[in-house]
Each structure stands twice: as C-alpha cells, then as structure tokens.
Amino acid sequence: MGMLSDADEKFLQEAISEAEAGLAEGGIPIGSVLVVEGQIVGRGHNRRVQQGSAILHAEMDALERAGRLKAEDYRRATLYSTLSPCDMCSGTALLYGIPRVVIGENRTFQGPEAYVRSRGVELVMADDPRCRRLMEDFIAQRPELWNEDIGV
Image (cartoon, rainbow, N blue to C red; front, side):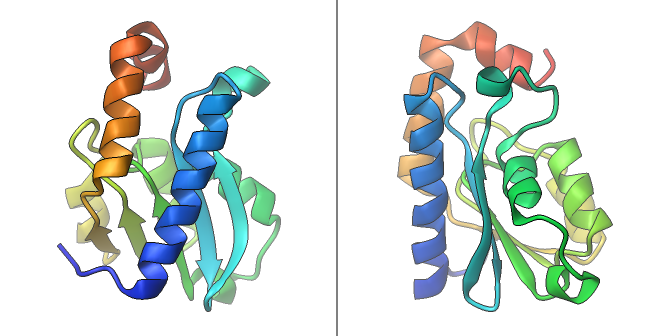
C-alpha cells in the first residue's frame, strides 16, 4: 500500500472520469490514464461493448490512444486504473516496462498483483470508494456483461 500524492489523486480522478464516460456510453465503468512526467499522454475507458472489441479494456484503450511512445517514455510512466488490471493489461504494462501502477480498487476484482510486484512494478493501492461504488453498482445491475468482460 502506498500513499497517494496530490498528483496521484488528480490523475486517479481523471481515470474515474473516463470510467463514468464509459458507463454513460453503455459500457463497463473502468477508466485509465497513462501519465509521463506529470502529463497525461493517453486516456481511455473500457470500450469492449461500444466497439465490439475483444481487447479494449480501459488500460489497453489508454495505451492505444497514447500511440507509439519511446521505450524511455514508458519507463518514466505511471498507469492509473480505476480497477486492478487483469492479466492482459498487467502483461502489457510489463511488456512496455511501466514501473508504477496506481489502482483505484481491487475488492471487486483483483488481477495478478503479486506477480506484477514480483517483476519489480510498484503498485499503489488507493482503495477509493468511488471506484468501488462504480463497480459494485455495475456488477449488481449487469452481472452478465461483467462476467463476459472477465471471461467467466
């Protein structure tokens, strides 16, 4: 568990705004931003439903929207996500060498956090009630869509 800095709070709020945008579009309320040296370089939300996509989780959307970055940019980045990243999104963060991930909450879903930590990534857990409420409400209202998203 790490303490959130003022910048972390600000960027997590941006990820929450993305999650709310996804929900408003009829999608799953998970949001993410990729930040390099205090600047958002990519933002996204889960758009599997909206785009009919197999892979557009929030983190993947943010990375895709960031476009091609240099390796050193990823190594100076922090990935913010309202929900603990799944295997796919965690693997992508590992592939590109993103050293720090700030997680809004991991009570409704927990990705491979121990493995990601074992690979040297700093995980900062916000345990944010806004993130948790978004997911709890969504899972209660749309359990079939949630189960599809996590591959159940």
